[in-house]
Length: 422
Image 1: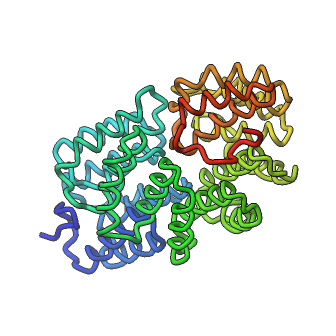
Image 2 (image 1 turned 180 degrees about the vertical axis):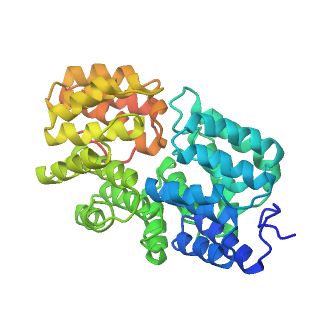
Image 3 (image 1 turned 90 degrees about the horizontal axis):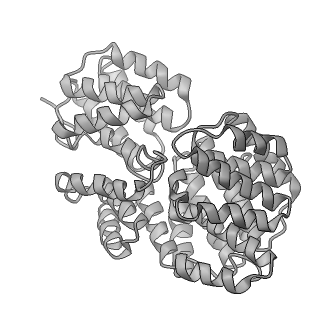
């Protein structure tokens, strides 16, 4: 019987379908372009190949194509599948149908018997995964516990090592993370997820020059249709800002991060654009009002309702800085989910900044300092919150307090000039 790259038995009898499916999975795990085409090729070779259909559905979900994802899922449920495949279809199907809690439970149960079912593992890892976006306290430790438990089953697999490195990095284990990510990249240096995680290691080590040089070179050969293109470009823009090369920052932002230039899921476009604009403001760069208006409108269009904490906080930033007080108030009052109260507090903080009410901003951000990890995202992304508090303190002339706070919380990752006046 045919197997995938992880030794899992497949229901298809077509070698061509198997090969196209394996190619699609590798492209998916590497955040490479051509994922849809690979799974479509597998389906063309074997229209009854269940995993090709559900993997196509999962890829579309990652791209924010909810309707198309559900169509592919419906087809997957009506094709022949072995027991393992049926369990994977059930678990991923729950996610695609918006039942994240039930989906995660189904995945964890499934992995007890099939720990190398990589397409079932993938939704749980990373700062945007089911654990990362759970809204629960301790989610960083849980991410590491999850990958640590699976590590014996994956050996030197390039995808898993990169994800394990990210989990190590987010909990502060930079030394072990460097070992893991270098092992991953030695096997597949063109893995976009791996390159992204290597960038985070540079960031956490405060290595701006090395990080910028690495990513600037790496992204040259990365297809813009790759899932991570927008976000990797955000890292490049952020480092350009850190070096004071504002012209380069805007060039990257306009070409690959802004709504009118980026390619990728709306979640990346909105959160990355709001973040880079605010980080620029903090660094003392003048941001044209129309840029804030554009990303505020984008947030209203693609994320009109609350429910995903990381998205809601960035939408609140965009609305606050654009002067859309009604939209900010909606997020503050209607924030929901496990981290809803954190969203409300942070949104009030950004509303206070927009109104130049610096003491209110300090009060709100201070309330969230011990648990803002609950909103999801990486430590690098949540530095925006840390720096927002620093900026509010500086506006009040409390520079000693601002310096002391960063010395305790982000002594290495803090880059020179990240907050003007520090």
